[in-house]
Length: 120
Image (tube, rainbow, N blue to C red; front, side):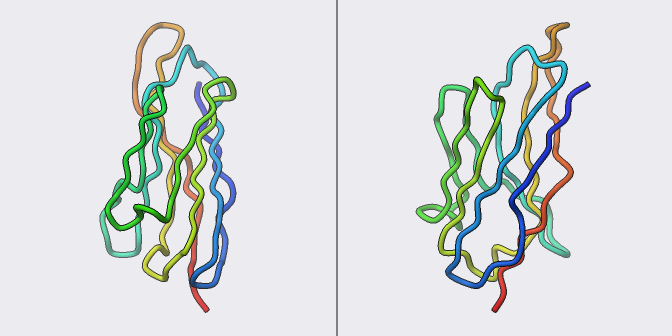
């Protein structure tokens, strides 16, 4: 079994910062790509930022220069530093990881989601 556990969401004022963290545990041989997605009410889930095992990152245009994704392969963790937050960043944020288990099978796993609310 594999678990992804997120933390760090909450309520913040516009212009503020939050840091999301996600830790993977369980039957993990190694982890390929990791990422953060978000889903606002009435909207589809969208990619916010992704990062390869080698550390190459990509971002949605709406968060470039404001958000930074990072990972620690030794700890099986991925983080999202969010600065200059805007009300339109309000959403449930989900951690994603493509995990290969000890049977050498790989598939995407998802966290339970953490709420981020940007409001004054």
